[in-house]
Image (cartoon, one colour):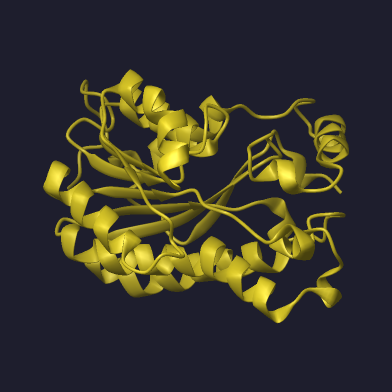
Length: 260
């Protein structure tokens, strides 16, 4: 039986790939810091060479490798997984922190979204998680954890979240189906659903300041959550302490989702 209690850091010996580092305000960075603090060996990825120049100091701060990966570029995800496993040997955890939609579709009504824009948003923000899992499975012989990032707009219609609402709803459904399929392999799958936090991706949402103010005012804790809190939850889900959990969307939003 798995020992849930140990004096060692909770992720000691665990090897993890975190996809989607954008800057020091990105959720991926919060996850990287907390998982590194918890003892995990990490490999990080960012979008392209321009992003690499910007976030290389963050990776250097943790002393971990950083690779580029554009999930829309054929072969990029496969190359990332190969590079990560070349460095780590195998994988115990994978954190998927990618979301994107064309601004012209994100800022318009869902009924007016283009088929091409909807498809691209779904491919980048949702299907890339399934593709990433497919590529990582051969490198997870002892099982492990797959974690992606969602938002309350998947469950409730939230003004100005638009196209990303249906996309995140599909992502949360994907989590449940992946949990069903991968459970026999010892692989657990979760979506973490943070409250609004000013990331680069979120900055594209119209009136995001008002959305954050509303979340702060209605949340039982009377505040927004931090990157550290999101990262801590993610680290927990990748640890042995969460060994009996899979297929869930777990909120870390100061209780905002529980209040009408």
